[in-house]
Image (cartoon, rainbow, N blue to C red; front, side, top):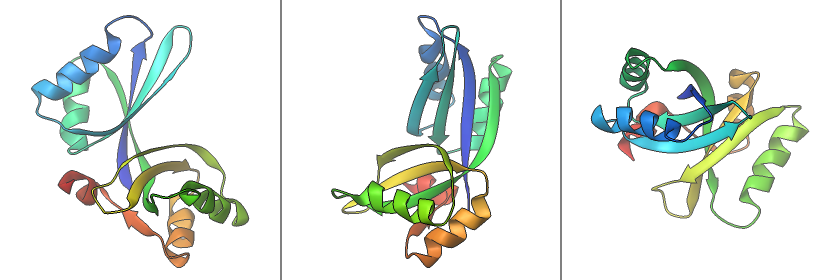
Amino acid sequence: MSVKQLSVFAENKSGSLCEVTSILSETKINIRAFSVADTDKYGVIRMIVDDPRKAAYALSEAGKIVNVTDVVGVQITDETGGLDILLKTLAANGINVEYLYAFVSTAANAADVVIRVSDNGATEKILTEAGYTLISDIDIGKK
């Protein structure tokens, strides 16, 4: 039950983010979560969208370098320490988190977290056994 994440590589210059968001807006793609990591010359725009296949196609057609990756989506309690408890659960089970970002959930008192790990299957099993609710592309598209 993974989530498709788009990673778009863009020059670190004025207007690069706007080019990406304009392509998605014109294609009627809703961005659900967005994260940017940069270096001096390039940035990686990571995002969760409501239609990953359509978004990847539109961005590629516009000449953008796009990579689609499976990541783990999980819902946590939106309260002090919610993320800490999640991370302690993963650490206790030997799961290394490469990166993560969160976005607002439509569920009451909840936040959604996107996690990049080396083994999605093992991570999903650990989280499910610990009582977490996993989210999928279908869940994200409904929000």
